[in-house]
Image 1 (cartoon, rainbow, N blue to C red):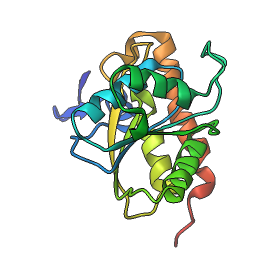
Image 2 (cartoon, one colour):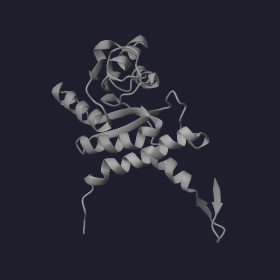
Image 3 (cartoon, rainbow, N blue to C red):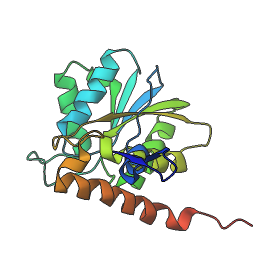
Length: 195
């Protein structure tokens, strides 16, 4: 939406600021590993498999505990792995972290597993739902070492929620504005007062 200031200059609408803040996407290049945040959206595994098959990483790490929205009695990570394997990703190139219940745990437990397996993570790719991309990136940057470079490869989930259309459905507006609130809650106590 275009708004003109009294001076006649173009102003950016508040929705554009929110869109640019919440929806993160990078130009992709080869990485050490693809890290996939958990969820009951098969699009996450499909995106990771597509990126793997393009040769953008040697490994995929799926994260996430059991989820009542998944019919099978397995973790999100194992469910996403099964989808990726069905799409042609070799099972031996996939790691699963099965305990994470939220984004901070996705990051923390994934880092622990990478360190335990002595896998390189200097440059990693995050696959997450499009509207979850800013919180995912901020969280992983907070948990991982400062020198880790992140590229974000968001995917549109089963709701069809994306940067172009999020203001067209009440449910989508609620999800995006919920992310704004969650970012505040996640990082409120992690900001140091400076003088």
